[in-house]
Length: 365
Image (cartoon, rainbow, N blue to C red; front, side, top):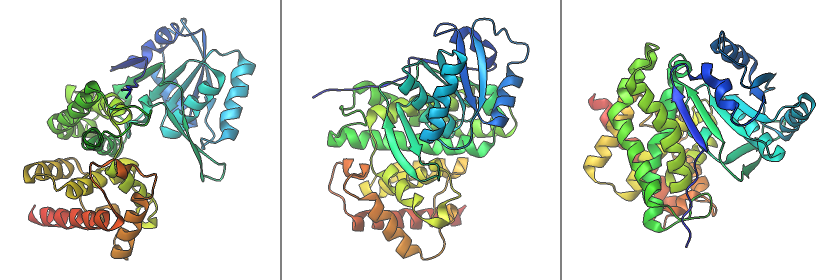
C-alpha cells in the first residue's frame, strides 16, 4: 500500500508578487512563453509596469479561448519558434490547463499564475482538454504538479467577488471528501492512499474557511488585501489543491458532475455546484446536527447555494434530481469512494434532503 502526496514545486503568494516574477522565473530559465487571454495580457503587463524583468524575458501569447489540442499544439510551435524555455499560464482554468499540458508535452518547466481563485486547479497535476467545439476530449494526468504557482493577491482583490466565493465552494468540499476517502481507504487521483499530511491539510482548509471566509469576502468587495483575504486565497488554492489531489474525492464532486448535466444549472460555477454537493454528501452520511448547521451556516454567510433553486434548478425538479443521482453513481464516479455502499436512490434522497433543509434555514433568516 503506497501513500502518495502531490504538491507544486514552489508556492508563492503576496501583494504585488507579480513585480518579482522575472526573478522567480530566472531560477528555471531565461525566456518564458506567457499564455493569457487578451485582457489578461493587458492586466499582467500593467501589473509588471516598472518591474525589473531582466532576470527572464517574457514573450506574451494571447489565448484563443479553448483548451484543445489545436491550441496546445499552437503553443508548442510558438515556444519552439521563439526560443522559450519556460511555459507560464496566467489566467483562469482553461489557460492554466493549456499551459500545463503544453509544458508536459514539451518537457518544460511550468509556472501557473491564477488571476482569480475560483477553484483549486492551479496546483494540480491535471489538464482537462476539450475538442475545438467545446466538448470534452479527455482528462490528462500530468507527471508532476507545476514547478511554481504564483499568486498576486492584489489581482485577486480586484477580481469579481463571485470567483473568490466559488473558490471557497470548491475548497469547502475538500475536508469532507478527504475524510470519506480515508475512512474507505480509497485511492486518491494519483492511485495512492491518503497520508496523515493530506488529511491534516484538508482539515486545515476547512478551518480557515470557517475562520476567515466572511471577512475575506468583505475585503474582496472593497478591493482590500487583508490577512483574511490572504488566508482564503491560500485555502482556495494551496490547501484545497493538495487536499483534494492527495486526500481524494467522494460524493460532493460526483453530485457536482451530475449538476453539470442539468441545463438550468449551466450558468453556475463549479465551486457553487460542488458546495451544494458537499451538503448533499453530509446528508448521505447522516452527519451530526452541529456539523450540518455549521456547514449550512458557512455557505449562507459567504453566499454559496444551499438549495437547488439557488442553483437555478426550479423546473422538473424530481426528474432532475434523479438525473443528477444517476450521473453521480455511474460505475467510475468518485461517489463510490464513500465508506458505505451508495445507490442512485440514496443519492437522490440525500440531494432532496439537502435542498429541503436549506429551504428551512433560508426561510428562518
